[in-house]
Length: 206
Image 1 (cartoon, rainbow, N blue to C red):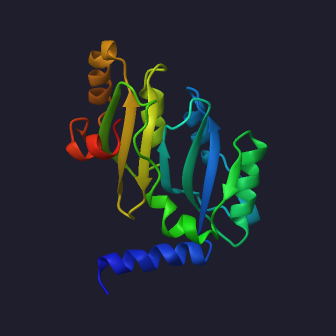
Image 2: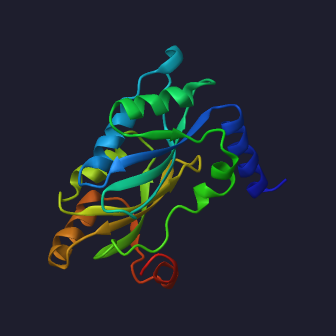
């Protein structure tokens, strides 16, 4: 038993005991949709009477279509059958959702394969961030962005630490580079610009 095996056991236990819901959610590919979806997650009802806070365990997205975005999202749950209720709640509020909690293909493979090169990801900057694992950290990030900056890639997986490692692709016009640098400075989250990383250019750029 090593740390990799422990993580595998923990992940399978979460899903197997239905303490984690996995969903594919479709949202409009337009500015503000990602923020509205995150706000909806933050206001999910407590199905089954649970009062415990609901945390995002995973978030994977890559821009691929001009009209819609497909997001792979994981959420903590408090009981069996809750994933279907969450999916129905998202659909009711305009975000069509597919419950993948019991889908072996999604759990074993697809969750690691979201992404790839995109012809739509022009003017993209790629950055690794360290977010504090506390409520409001992501909303602070989204609220501080300029409205004309678009998120083209987002990857997050909860590692159980007191901080989260986030990979974000942002489409920033060249004329906004000075404002973007100020945004990063004001935000105050540790970050590394990976735009020139050869692995990124090989696997994610077109």
